[in-house]
Amino acid sequence: MKKLMIATATLGLLAAAPVSAQTSTTTTTTTTQAETTGSITIAPEKRTVIRQQLGSTAPVTVQEDVTVGWTVPQNMELQTVPETVVSEVPNVKGHRYFVHDGNVVLVDPQSRKVVTIIE
Image (cartoon, rainbow, N blue to C red; front, side, top):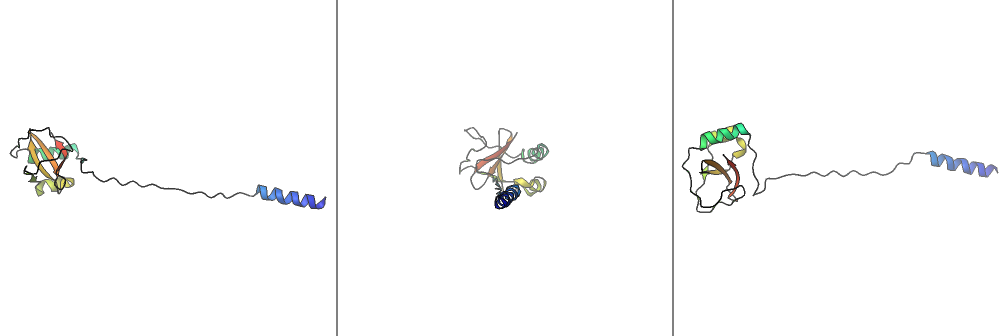
């Protein structure tokens, strides 16, 4: 009987002991890069700066609808965004542009895709 009580007491202690379960945590990090058909975000006041400084450029006639993601034909000349604009709106650095229907159209020069249209 004594052995049974000791065995029962030992089992009771083991059962009462905290059980450490293995836990694993998975962290997923998503890095978003601008897609070639994507757009860039420009604050409204910075859009005004771009429109004021680039809007007087000679307009280009295009027979197609110009939309974000549209690929600019190779024969269409793109203008370099001046350093005066880049200094005020740094995220347009490296982009090119043209003016169409009174809008400034920013283009990724590598893919030649329209990234944003400033009306």
